[in-house]
Length: 142
Image (cartoon, rainbow, N blue to C red; front, side, top):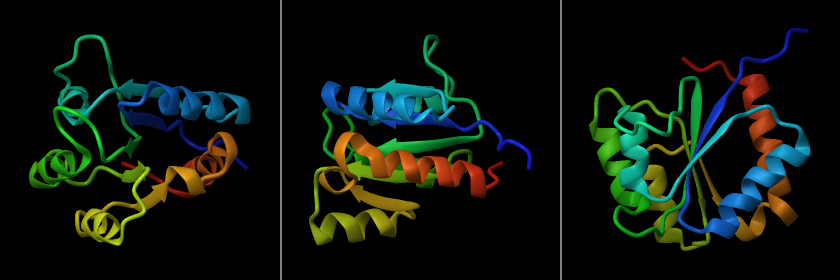
């Protein structure tokens, strides 16, 4: 069986501790997915539109998106991405502290691939790393 294609992760998260925990969990699990970390939705758009000279997120990629961030929050980011013909098909998973039904419904209305509450993805984000590893092995992205 051949090794799956590399998958790049764009982590959109304003909490340093959460971001470091996600990256450390992936490293510990041995998942070979490079991670680009940005602090809010606007910074993520800059990376996706290749307007950030320092940070890149080449395809194939998957976006892990927090909802509650300064400058441009996750919902604002989703609206812009889904309205942009060049970005509308991005694979986006929400990774947030909000377990509110209204937030989950609103995110799925924007065609997210999944909605994960940080407290439910296990110690050190172990369930997240299992999901990402399984996803990169099973799914073929453009």
